[in-house]
Image 1 (cartoon, rainbow, N blue to C red):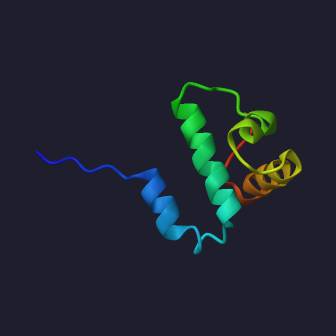
Image 2: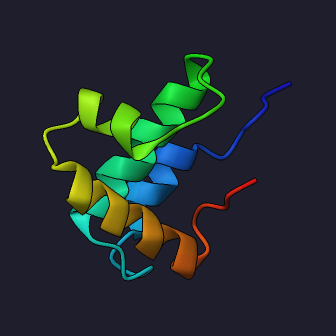
Length: 75
C-alpha cells in the first residue's frame, strides 16, 4: 500500500506567489514550522530573531501580516 501525504513545505513553496505571500513571510512560516517541530510550543518574535537574520521589527510586521492573512493564529 502506498500512502501519500501532503507536504506542507512543498505546497507552500509551490503556491506562495498565488497566496500573495512575500519571501520573508514564507521563510518566517517555515521557521515557525521548524521551531514547532523541534518542540517549541510558544513562538515569539524574539525567538524568531535569534534564528533569523531579520530585524525584530520586521518579524513583528511579518507576524502581524500572517495573522491578518489567516496563515497563523494566536492561541
